[in-house]
Length: 294
Image 1 (cartoon, rainbow, N blue to C red):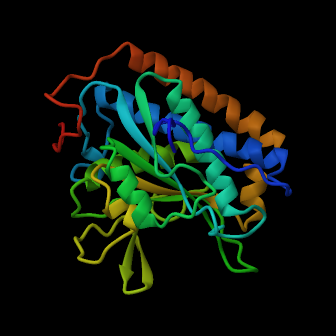
Image 2: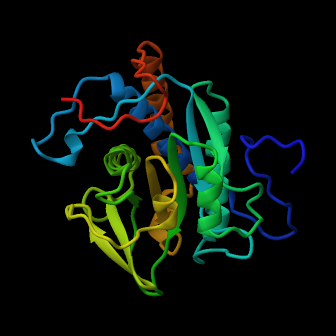
């Protein structure tokens, strides 16, 4: 749209219909705080002491970046004529609100340049179109926010996320960010699905195959388009099950805000104070550098 900044959060058309409940909005803010804390953890860990991990595991990898500001792309899954999963809440409504708040938070911090995947959440945009829009903006990191779902009668719940799969250019950096994100969601009370909340998806024709992150073999099949077609570390996060009363209740009440939100705010402030005191060594450019820092 003419005169509109590409870095501004996408606008949403006002509709005369029942929107998200106050409790649900509160839950979105709790998730937002977890995502925000993960960004700080990612940045702070670059200069912080090495974590104790078992030798040989992917967790030993530490990405190295240049100086801020970092160009962070935030994508909201579905939208427009595609509502996504339907449950206690609608996926597209939930992801749009979370993405919008996260973009606003990034906009307020000079260490980040927020990037969007489309001009409006009311616009129907295919994953390939959103990936192309993100790729054209030369991002340093991409997060695509989604909501999970399960068939009627299922008790499935919890958080999981999908980094770029093994063998791809940005796999190790993507896995690193996914681990930070999963750990913060767990601290907020979310149950992690799979191996530490991190899984891989491969497409065999039109069929999706879910693989645990313990399987590190390189495969030819494609993963999610938004992970494959952006030239940066990328993670797709399923912030909760929209079909689970447990998930919605945990992240959709005033009690959840008080028990999970406030500690997360404190964590964000602590990490922010830490990272402001440390500088990340410039390595000639502001793009991610592939190497393991030991």
